[in-house]
Image 1 (spheres, rainbow, N blue to C red):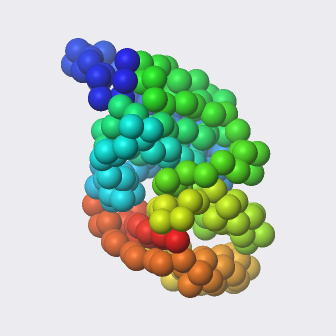
Image 2: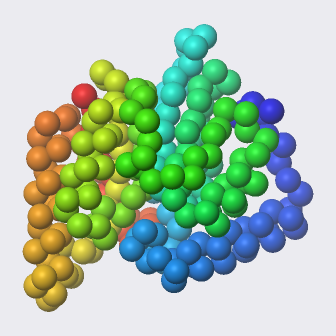
Length: 218
């Protein structure tokens, strides 16, 4: 089955599956809060902003997209709605339990490939667009630098990178001096990346916590 040929499931099984996804997400958060970033999955308002640069492909070969840090697939769902039959989507998630859920959830989508790996282990093949849900503010600055370097190497000319960050950490964490130093380092690093690439920003208030979505293009 192609991306735009999915058959809508009956109501009750969808409800059961939604509850199961939330439980898996919560378990994943308590098991590894740094990797998950938030106790709440991304809202539809946020996922729609993240995938906004994806345009319907009019080429026979299609386009290739990459999603990193898929979680339970909230962003993935928004992405597959915008892809054409000829497009390809690689979905990367490091957590084995979440990967199992993603494989089941998108098993009928022949254009979607689930990859259980760290972003740093990916082959540097060129993508037309990258959507990142990695919680950068939870990581150390050195790793964030490595990830952005990796993304830049995988971006084609005129391709895009979107990612988001929650609005609260920079002012809230000023009461925690050591954490604030790290966040300031990450902030300056992301600013430097934004200076190298063309950058735009949009706010998403209908998400918990509210977030900024950043769009980077070569």
